[in-house]
Each structure stands twice: as structure tokens, then as C-alpha cells.
Image 1 (cartoon, one colour):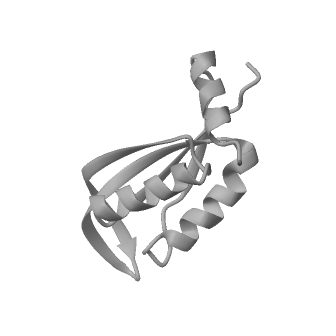
Image 2: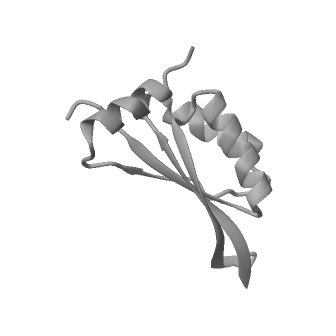
Length: 108
């Protein structure tokens, strides 16, 4: 397979924020697609306290060529001081879909 795809994940404080940022990243070709999963519960340590928060999880599909720019753009738009931005390499997938992701992340 010659089309490399990345799955990047980030959480947001609410669906409206997630939707707006996801739309901007897709519109500007930083990601080909964003899947919003509302109403996830996160339990985490922040400033030495255990916190609970209802958040929206977003899965973004992007490419290695666009990832650095994607990460910087997402960080600049994100409301959190330290946003969750993690990335996984997609080991396999439908070749046509992977080509579609690659085309969707091409600037211009």
C-alpha cells in the first residue's frame, strides 16, 4: 500500500467547538475527514487533581505530509491550554479510501 494515512484524535469541551474546528481543518485541507463522537466522559489528572469532564472526541484522517501543519493549526484553534492531540498510523485500509484521504489533504 502506498497511500499513508494517519488517524489523529483530539477531545473538545463541547460539540459546537469540535464541529467548528473540525469544519475549518477539513475546509483548509489539513484533514480529509473528521468524525465527531459527542458525550464521551474523560477522567484525567490536571494540576494535581483528578478531574471528570464530558467532552466530544474527534477522529481526524490526515497524511504524514500534512500532519505537522495539521497539529500546529489544531493547537492554535483549540481552547485547551494543553490539548490532546495524538496520532496513530493506519496499518491497512481500503486502498480507494486511503487515496481519497490523501487527495483530501492536498493543499490547493
